[in-house]
Image (tube, rainbow, N blue to C red):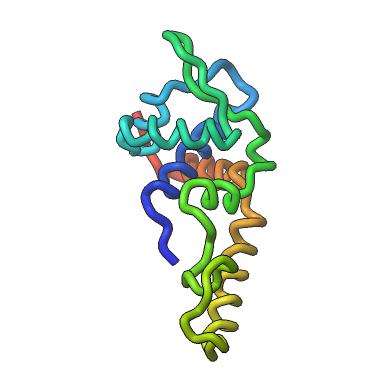
Length: 147
C-alpha cells in the first residue's frame, strides 16, 4: 500500500493546524505551506477537500485562514486517509463491491486481509493530535527548522 503526496500533505496540513488549535485566529495557507513544505497551490486544493469533509473551517479575507473544527485528538488518521485516498486496502479484490476474478478466492486473500487490518489498526489508533505532539518533540530536538 502506498500513500500518495495527497494523503501525506493533507495530514501535514492538519498537523500544522493542530499546532494552532485553540489559540489565536485562523492560519493562512501560505504559513501552512511554508512550515510544512507543501506547494501552496496544491495545498489550497487539499484544504478544499478537508473543508468539505468537515475537518476544517476556512475564513476569507486579510485576517482569514483555516482552523480545525474538531479537537485534533479526535481526528483519526484513518479518516483523513480515507477522505483523501479512498478505501484503505492493499488489493482491489478486498473491496466488497468488486469480485475476485478467482471465484472461489485464493490462498493469498487471508494474508492481504491481515495486512489491511494491521494498517487500519495503526491508522485508527493514531490521531492528528498525537502526530502534532510528535512533531513538536522533533522540532524541539532539532529535527525541523523553519523560518
